[in-house]
Length: 225
Image (cartoon, rainbow, N blue to C red):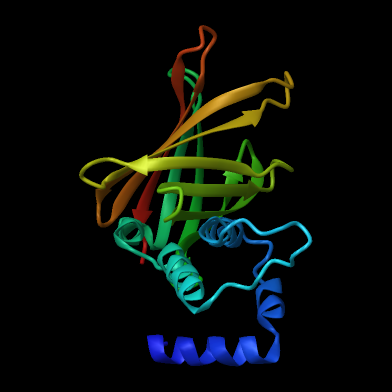
C-alpha cells in the first residue's frame, strides 16, 4: 500500500470514528502494546478526566511501519531454507554403550508466507509409534530464533530460543522443561547443523549427574526429496 493510500485510509477511519474498532483485532498483540506505548510517550501529558486521543496520521504511519518491519521475513529466515523438504531420519539416543536407535521420516515446509518452518515427524520410539509437530522461525523483534515442539509422548509444549553461528550453518537453541520423573526444571540445548544441502544433524544435550551438558541424542536427516 502506498503512503498516499495509507493517509487516505486513515482519514476515512477518523471521519467515521472507527479508529478504535480497527485496533480491536490487534489489541492482543505484544507488537500493538509496544506501538501504543510509543504513541503515548509522544503525546504530552493530559488531565486524567480528558479522554485519550486516537493516533494522528504521522503516528499511525510510524506504527504501521513498525508492524511491517516486525512481520517481514528477512535474511535470518533465509538461513532456514536449506532445511525445507522431505527427509529420512536416523536417531541414536542414550550414552555410548547404551544407545537406542530409531527410524522415521520428516516433512519440513514453509507456512504463513515463509515466516515459519513447520515439521511433521513420524517414526518409532522405544518400540512405540511416535509422531511430532514443530515450528521454527525468527522473531524480528526479539532478534532470536524461536522453536516450539509437540509430540505424542508428552502433554507439554517444548519451547526454545536460539541464535545462528557466524557462518549461518549452525543454529543453537536453549530452553527449560520440567522433568516428569523428578518434577524439577532442567536446562536443555538443541543444535541444528547443516552438513550439506542433502543432510543435517539435530543434536540434543541435557544435564548429566554433575550438571555438565551431555549429548543425549543425535538425529541425522538425509534428504529423500
